[in-house]
Amino acid sequence: MYDGFYNLSKKPFQLTADSDFFFNSAVHKRALAYMRYGLTQGEGFVVVTGKPGTGKTMLVKQLVTSLNNENITIGIMVSSQVGADDLLKIISATFGLSYEGEDKSTLLTRIECFFIQQAMEGKRVLMIVDEAQNLPKDALEELRMLSNFELSGKSLFQTFLIGQQQLSDALLLPEMEQLKQRIVATYQLKALNADETKNYILFRLEKAGWQNTPQFEDDVFNTIFSYTQGIPRCINTLCDRVLLFGYLDELKVINLSAIEKVIADIEDESSLTTHEIQNITTKTSTIKNTFEERISSLEKTVIDLQKTIAKERILLRKAILLQLDMDTIYNETL
Image 1 (cartoon, rainbow, N blue to C red):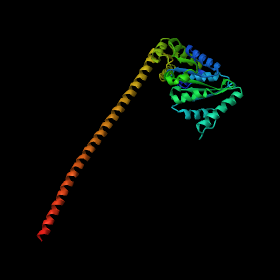
Image 2: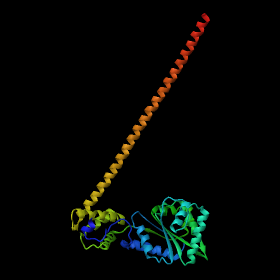
Image 3: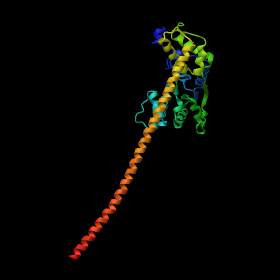
Image 4: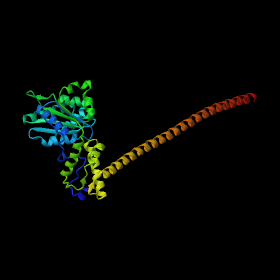
């Protein structure tokens, strides 16, 4: 839509991580330096954390693109809540090893043999775990155990843990002390500052073939920074909406008014969503209350019926006994 209107070769603010759009800000440059330093150590763990949307996945793609795959075998997994045994199956699948129906000892043996084979071919094995904050403690411990595999005094396996702040918190737990001792580099990814936010926007536009159409007035960038707090994903979302707004209104210049209108629209949508959630919650609560009232009413009715039946049983028993007494008297009279 707007990419054709503005003669762009591609969408500059897509949310998917495309290494062609990697912006080498000060924080991302430093994060890459820590990751590369970790690689030179050839062992242990490298940990990179950051808030959602700060560009962690983009960092991984940039690192992988820059590596010499002739000397390193890379596996990438996006973690979920998997236990230790499932983790071994995922690692096996990542490196093309069979795992169906195998027990843990067989999986470990096969993985170790693969590591040794790679080392014999002059390669190191690197496992990059994205969204690593989702890994439970037993899975992290399994990764630590894999880091113990060695050949001729050299480690066969290295792990990069990429995740949100919860990952750092988990690694501070006392039971994670042994893993923490194996961390060779760690870095916390920060958001962009105001100048970097402006440069980031212009960089992505230029990568998409932007020829200064639409033109961005200088005063819009601080507003974009203030609203997004320098989080790249938030910047992408806002700027994508701004360009769509510009296309629909056929704007050749993006000014502060356009930015403010888009932000207002986003805020309205957010408020509407919150209101809808509240309505759903209220309706659910009402339905729940109505349902509970009906259950309570039915329970009361059942209790009343039980009492009535009990009374009727007593009366029936008395009537039967009375009838028996009358029959006895009648028979005696005869």
